[in-house]
Image (cartoon, rainbow, N blue to C red; front, side):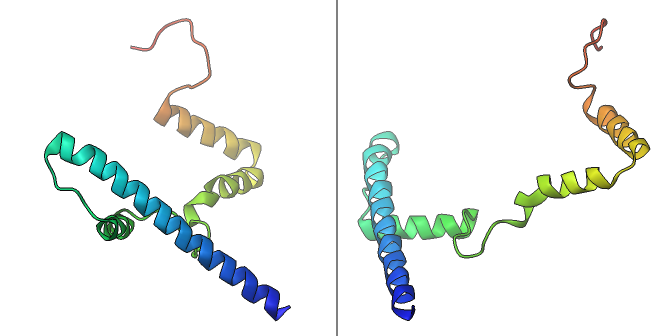
Length: 114
């Protein structure tokens, strides 16, 4: 069993490195194709492309491969659970609040809104 775990970890590491190399090469190629022609910027090396990827990950975030799903991805499930716990009166109050905020989406009206 331990050997299987080690093999899977090694395969994951190999694929992670392969992904980083291919994605960095893609960024480098795209940069070197577009940026000098469009803006007159310099051509970059492979390691500079890796640095750009790391910097963009730090600045803009992105997928959390090791951190699990983002907490805000569960909003739909939480909202459904809240909806199930509401009484019919609370549901109607909620609908009215949403209509006042967002308008009456999905309902047809004879008169256009002003």
